[in-house]
Amino acid sequence: MIRILIADDHDLLRDGLEQALGAVPDIQVLGTASSGSDLLERLAELSPDVIMVDVDMPGMSGLEALGSMRGGPPAIVVTMHESMKVRKQAIDSGAVGFLSKSTPLPRLAAAMRAAAAGESFIDGEYDLSPHMDAVLDPGAAALTARERELLSLLATGVSSTDELADKLFISQKTVKNHLASIYDKLAVSDRAQAAVEAIRLGL
Amino acid sequence: MIRILIADDHDLLRDGLEQALGAVPDIQVLGTASSGSDLLERLAELSPDVIMVDVDMPGMSGLEALGSMRGGPPAIVVTMHESMKVRKQAIDSGAVGFLSKSTPLPRLAAAMRAAAAGESFIDGEYDLSPHMDAVLDPGAAALTARERELLSLLATGVSSTDELADKLFISQKTVKNHLASIYDKLAVSDRAQAAVEAIRLGL
DNA sequence: CCCTCCATGGGTCGGAGGGACCAGATTCAA
DNA sequence: TTGAATCTGGTCCCTCCGACCCATGGAGGG
Image (tube, rainbow over all chains, first blue to last red; front, side, top):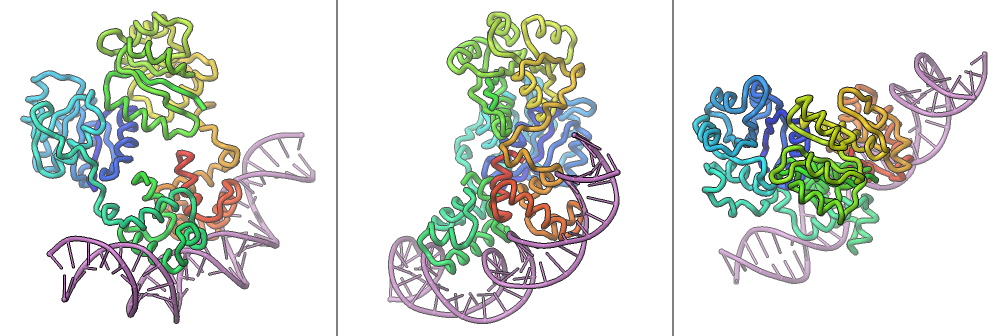
């Protein structure tokens, strides 16, 4: 699970990205910031694995914020301007990646995986394909086939032990055993939380 | 259900908005376009109820596209530029609404409801509040404000009576009372099912 | 003014759910 | 062949949840 922080002053992009990235299985949006100074504050509170920073923000710009926080998590700079000048400034400010706002979402996700893995890259000069396939988060990846089946049912509203056992043609005891190991793997403690996780993971 | 078409050349914003707006219960994203001419094509195929158009797009701009399609569905113009000049141009081009990209997502959704209802408005000069509440299905529409609050928490994985009571600053008994009436209204029988419903409804 | 709805709270009680532990059968890779 | 993982099933225990009963104070509509 890659924990990210998004900094952009445009609410629509920010809210949209938060929602869209949150739906990516291995990415979790810890929080957002709407300015450079806001970013620095959130950074201290949340300690994300990767941050996404817009260049143009009111007050302290994204690049200024980056410059003043050397040593923080890897940062991916996103901008509308394709200019080489801004690109170079971003690298100089310590960004590990540089993307246009015209980048498709899966590519941004891949960039975040690359950044989280400690790789440095520049769009157009680096092959992101090794990261294009979503790697599920550790817990979800460990789920067995049967556990996924059970989770899918849970995500559709089948919640009672009785019904679950019925639909899976197994005893109620086995359902509870599967549930217990699901709780363990997803780090949750009841069906309601498991259902929320299941939906978030797209099951 | 309001069927919309999104036109913006920035993939990140487009993909993000598509995801985020799709999660709004009464809004359905029919498709997207990345340029003015692209928009005109999609418009004929999809016949949306409302279109969201970015001003700045390569090739034919959003305003040019609007100008050449008088008579189509109501259009909401979105832009990064707050200038009065662009705003006036948008109105002249036939837009029924004008919003900044710094608009919160719920406000954009409200604007779309207003546009779909045949109302004309300009951000900052028009009260969108009558449209701020999502029109939900019969059961969900009957939910009270407090019940929605509780459901939202449930949808984020806060499932125990104790935690819920804590976050809402009420007694555990009241939490259980609220839950009982939620179960009744949503026709479910436990927290897991309620959480699934809550997410489905976009809370 | 009265009546309804909402939010808050109380109590009881049976049963479902979750935790801890164990164990046989099967499959599959080391 | 041996061991690990998976699926299946079990027992015990105790907490928590959901159903049903109720009460009070405030807001809003007729």
